[in-house]
Length: 599
Image 1 (cartoon, one colour):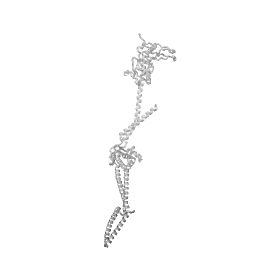
Image 2 (tube, one colour; image 1 turned 45 degrees about the horizontal axis):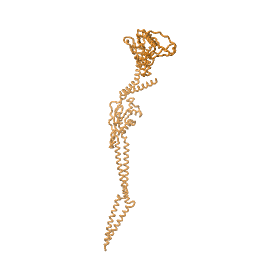
Image 3 (cartoon, one colour; image 1 turned 90 degrees about the vertical axis):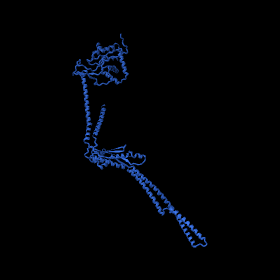
Image 4 (cartoon, helix red, strand yellow; image 1 turned 120 degrees about the vertical axis):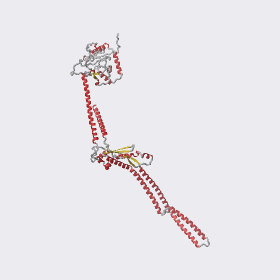
């Protein structure tokens, strides 16, 4: 005796009045088989043995309105055009639903699968994809989660994107001369009922006749081939348009530029030279000795020379000395590199900046110059002239400073010399006014004479006293002695008078001696000032000599034998890259604008 499975769930349907006398089909249980969409009967869909044994029930009449709360059996409308086996299966399912309305183990398992699918956390987009896939395969799910479950039962991934071209593959009989029919790419399970998708139909089946005699599969294959041919045609047309644009905007300008460089451009000859600026060696301080022989001592001078050689002043001097404008106005030069007749200074300066290239290497202190001309000899002449201009500029950079320093030192020395000369002349004038070269010596001489006269006077007075002591002195001797005493007294009085005049008054010898002494001190001071000015002049001259700059040419300009410019291949490749970059930028900009406008 078989026992019924335990009832787990009842489904009660509350129905109301139905429109037009039709009863709406009730929703099938979760575990019941899903209805299949009506399709055209094919030979491939053969009825299964267990389905052929089911009898076909009679269609029930449309029920009237049922009262609320009544348990109504679940009915499933038989689809029109279904096979007898499918109709029998639907009737059997309806009968099972009416027998007790008790959920089976399959229904319970289906509900458990749906609960597990809900716990997966699928997004709304994935659920919508599963529903559309179930509708495409002809399934009738009760919910989005049931659609996922039914697709997985049939071995179909509901979230896999497929291409329309991958839905069909050539059939096995296509290689044996058969029709180009296609088979669906989907898993086959013999235990499940066939999926209602377009199938390959044999030519001998009981198919309705088509007006054009072509089956739907062949028509579909023909349409797919047509689509592929259309895609290939459009791809070829786009490639042709792309190559046309590239040829017009990239290849053609590059070809024109290459033709100019190879056949039209006048060959130019470049003369290279190198020179550096040196500073005079000095025995200065520690930092002066360290930087005197390096490039840092002449860095500013090198930059100033570089700026001058690329200036308009240097161009005008070169044109006046070597005929720069006349050379580049030669008709033998091509029109792009040639100057017009009677060009302006601005037009000539543009050519000058292209023809004269000067670079300065601060790490080595070397100035590199390249002069370009249509004639190698003229190019060498231009280079030598510019080197001469640079040497003059280097000399003039520190000349003013050196001249100012030496001039100031010379003026100071001259002023000290003049002052010393004036002091010397004043001392001589004082000596001439007093008619005495040395007043102090004069005073000392007078003092010596007075002392001598006083001694002699005392001796004569003693002799006179000795004569007068006699009772009967010799009158002649007494008168002679008295005359000597009187003469010595007169001389001593005169010497005392001279001494008094030399020591007192404005014109005394003492005043004259003091003035002469002051004049001698002034002369000594002026001598010291003159000596200091002379030393300063010598040091200034040495410093000015140390500030001198010298331009040394390390690489002499030599005329070249082969033309240096234009570089034909390099310039052509560069032109191609430039045109390609411009075209790419314009294409990207146009595509972005087109997309923005269309969106």
